[in-house]
Length: 64
Image (cartoon, rainbow, N blue to C red; front, side, top):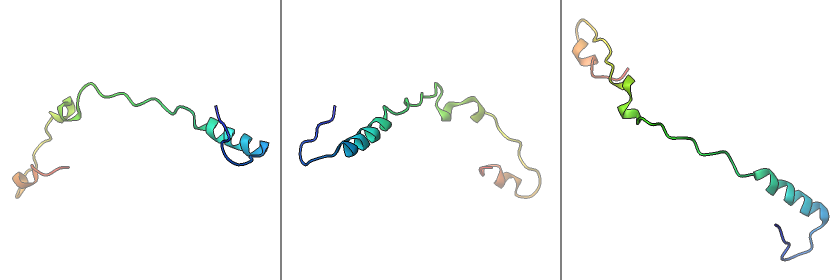
């Protein structure tokens, strides 16, 4: 429900206001949370193969 409290609004202005407020809607539903937290997900438990050669041990701890 809208009510003009102060001033003299024309029917066109009220129609524009109703159109803008009506287009806002209730919004989208909130996204659902994942059951498994990302830090506990199974794909995080898999390890990549270590690189061979000089400095291979050093690069094994770096993110890929």
